Length: 388
Image 1: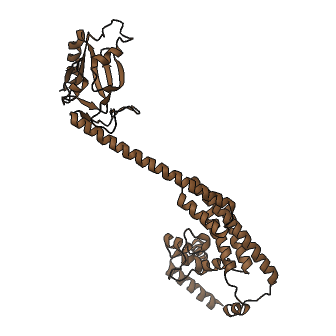
Image 2: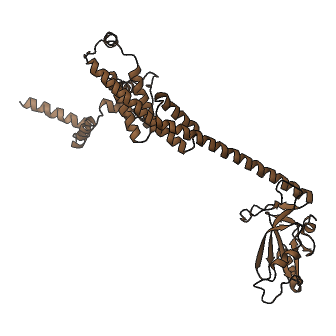
Image 3: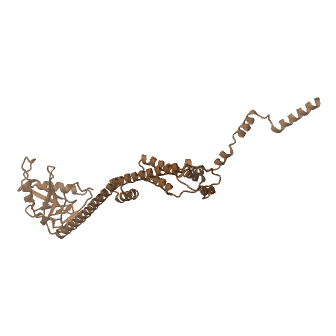
């Protein structure tokens, strides 16, 4: 007994010398946790893939598909997807067709007429396809249980589903035609209407739409012709005006900051005749009193004196400084200076000198009391003088 005890004591002492300490409860718990934390094989397999790979794998599963992928990773067919597709063709022809028709109804309720029409067409296609004999079905699927059906009842169901599908499809064509017509999509409306009439040639609603489509098509064609004619006339008028301005040596310039003058613009008396009178919108400026007058169409043959006789006296001129006899008129030159305009000369005499220009489709004429003309000229030059 003492001998056995000494052997146990020596063995214990040797273990202390080897490990240096007793096994701790913490190390034991870590070993247990490590053993319990091992993943199941399926999860461990997923853990080996990146996030992108996992998403790609999930996209192969119909439930998680974000885009249609009909192949597996090896380029073969996607078995799960094909199985779901096959469900649509399970059962008798009447059941298959009714399945497609109900899907069409779902899309019709959401007003997806094009998709609804496609499902109704599939329903009709199933019913029109030749029926397979029982022997053929046994040869294709030897393990299937063939259930005898009431052929008369089945034929009745097929007829009812076919008639309903034709009616539903005709309604889709009607809705598609109306929608396309409302948006002036004439070719699409005509196509949808023709498709409907091919199925139901006596459909009065579609026949009425044919008439409306034809009338709308004629109206749109007329509008298109009128627009083309109007645009061509505008181009011809623009060419005639450019020719008239060039022939008279009247300079024009656009700043890109033209005021909104609506329909007021430089124009010819006869828009297509370059030799006819030019009319130019003109702004009369009274800078010493911060006032203006606007003349919509100043004829090139009219003098400023004649035009001012219709404008003067001015309602705000309490001191009567502005009379035809007591004022002078000035215009800016192309170089930024000033030129005095002869009041008695036709405007064409000033415009054709090449020293002034029509800016943004409008003339500017400064009207100054003669007694204060030098004062204004000095101030004008001072403001135009470069600083520094």
